[in-house]
Image 1 (cartoon, one colour):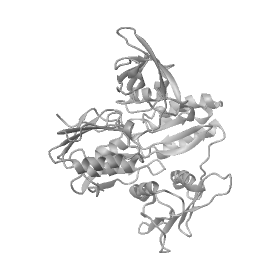
Image 2 (image 1 turned 60 degrees about the vertical axis):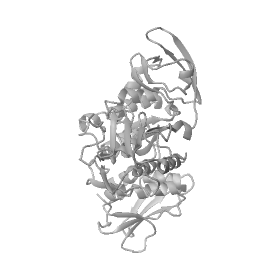
Image 3 (image 1 turned 180 degrees about the vertical axis):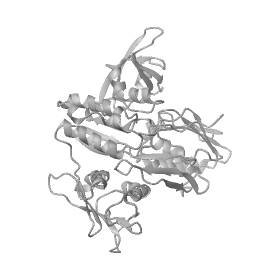
Image 4 (image 1 turned 135 degrees about the vertical axis):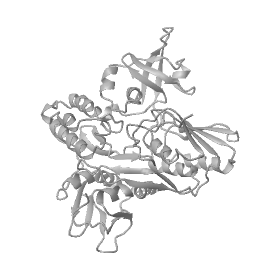
Length: 458
């Protein structure tokens, strides 16, 4: 695809040193540079442009009240994020697909003014950037047959209408997200059906467990069928993802009621939102045992997860086995996931491949991915990874490079099937459109999206 004037043999320099990005963001740009390379069809590196034949991506402060935007100057080979501060610069980067569709335009990161404009944005962005129609067996024309003129003019009605439409794509990363429905996700795993949420896992440290709720109980949910209709996900995880959404605590705290189907016993409890902490995200049983059991519920950066894995690597022997429980781990920070994965590598390893949507309805060429053993303490023994259908996104990226290695096994359930690389666009009052933009493959060329990662044979 590329941009006019940008030659394949040149380098585009990400001149972001003065944009205010922290080290974590710069590490993400470096780790995911091949997405820019695939879209722009040239080499991409962090740093200052020195050769005038090369291109540069620079940041130019935008005027007060102006939305972030993105423009291309073929004469100077300069891609410019018109933005103030790192957050707006990140927003402007979400416009790259739109710019590739029309390099002479200057797309803006702003919400549409009407529901019809919002519906048209959904249609354009999904048809241009969503890469899974064929993989998921969805007819593009049939999906796109819903016209903008059908969109309800009222924004509340539009939210449900748009969520149901996008949910038909069957992808947990691709969704219309309402701010009013976002919040804290409690630690429970359950499946949503027409009569409520059947709880499958109720941790002993949870508020529900303290109230007497156990696995197998049903949580009362208002209008469960609407949650199911407005949730997109792969078949193996759809009921669980819908349950996760329906259990969200949106206003600091929320009261739930559940009952035991066999006895009729009914219990209510209050769930209080809490920020993630190292103790809630990562639990380690006896690190000196022959089998060291570790549970990681999400890849949250900045909590000290890496330090715990440092200690585990330093103190372990080659005869020990780590049983790493990633059930219910819905992903998180890609850089953290890759860094932890590398602690289990023994040599440079082909970890799979990836293809990105080109913004115009097609895919870039497939790019092979390699990884190297970490320079931080590595685990010397065997690794056994436990998965379920709620293991997806960055958690699947972690597993992808490890499955198939002699010292690694994957057990329990097929994963959710969606490592995504989502693109975000503002859609309306407190609404955001999120669209997956990549297909990830294992080293044998099998897609992770939709199909998931299957456990190893017993």
